[in-house]
Length: 514
Ligand SMILES: CC(=O)SCCNC(=O)CCNC(=O)[C@H](O)C(C)(C)COP(=O)(O)OP(=O)(O)OC[C@H]1O[C@@H](n2cnc3c(N)ncnc32)[C@H](O)[C@@H]1OP(=O)(O)O
Ligand SMILES: CC(C)C(=O)C(=O)O
Image 1: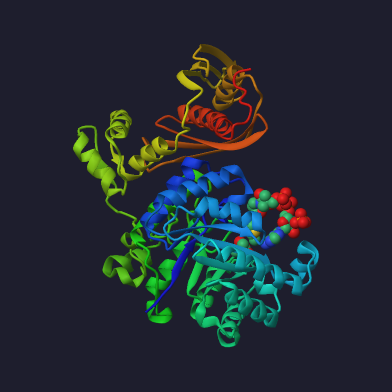
Image 2 (image 1 turned 90 degrees about the vertical axis):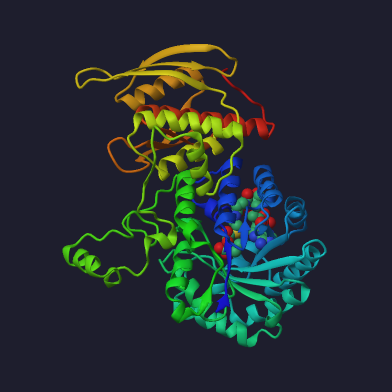
């Protein structure tokens, strides 16, 4: 079996999804989970693009020990210098440097001749090789580039020091047959290709990203670039979970394997969905809620007689557990700690105490505390805004079909004051948000509001996701609670606190409660 390296770009290309905005703690949490999933390379961001990206790439490179961490860089010395500062603490510092090679990009965007592009690529790879032991070079828009030009530039960047050559389908234009031909052609025609690994990076504009990635693997790619849940720029990237499971289930055809721990897939998908606010459609392959649901009589009959009649993947393979009930209100600290360990987390005593209080509180209200509930509590605890500038102490909502909904809220402010306010709205959530806005004083614009339940049943936890604009900054916020209105208030305040935390970290003028 050929070994295929998995290069996860959820934190770089995935974060380029419109509306996704992960903060420092969230990126670190996703990186830790990717490490548990056992990816080979994590692309943690684009260090030169902003101080925030630099900080998170550096923290991930300094923390992650189970795989290599990389960051994206333009073919510019200052991007390479910044990337080195961010990545040098990693176990195998790796630079991902790119330049466009298609006529459209060279003429209109870079305004460089093909010869100038070759010269820039070679010079910058040579420069990067002074620092980085491993350099991945990408030919942006490779799939719309001239094949003989690709051969020439690839030969020269390999000579300059690149050992991974990535052939992206940047605009999601190629077909499986065509990409197979490109990889075969490069394998046969690049003189020094035995000194490099070929990599594939596909976008889903025409819905072919996974099929194209698999075809590239079939024709010689030794590395696949993908994201969890297929999130990414425009229509997204190739979905990691689909590629990995296709290689496993059809190993008879591909004869290639990854080193992923497939049972971590569901959890990774849930975490990324929660933190990005990008909901996974029910019919999504591998991780959608319906992926293992047999609805029609003939299928159910077949599955009851013999599972393999209609089931090619077992839910257990990707970590979907049929045993959902785990703990209840009589469970103690030991069992709870053990469950957290089973979920792949380790917590210190202080964290355990806080989590246990949240767990007991939930267990009092809910008959069955599922694995998903515990995962939600854990995630909320680990990625909560570092400092809760605003804290809701009490919330009361008055609603009736013939009344105007009114919310009354008691909240502590950044100055430690306790304020009480009330306001009305056309619905209960609007009444809550109008009340909070009165107390926070700066205008807050609500851009998006979504709600879902964490697990099934009437007593399920509610999870609210909001996107707001506050103090000229856009961010998202999340809140989980047993009650939808409390979860709504928490999500709103979480978003405001996240902006205030970010401003403090970036050392910008912090203006709270003016
Ligand atoms: C296919 C991909 O996904 S590539 C990754 C895309 N990701 C991102 O762009 C996210 C992060 N980007 C950013 O924050 C900003 O674009 C920055 C900080 C990188 C650059 O910002 P600015 O300096 O304001 O430049 P801006 O984004 O407007 O334009 C890009 C410039 O880089 C140049 N450029 C683009 N790609 C490359 C490259 N690979 N190597 C060198 N220069 C490049 C463009 O030609 C343009 O140069 P020009 O100003 O001389 O015309
Ligand atoms: C930078 C490269 C790899 C990229 O993201 C693309 O071409 O889509």
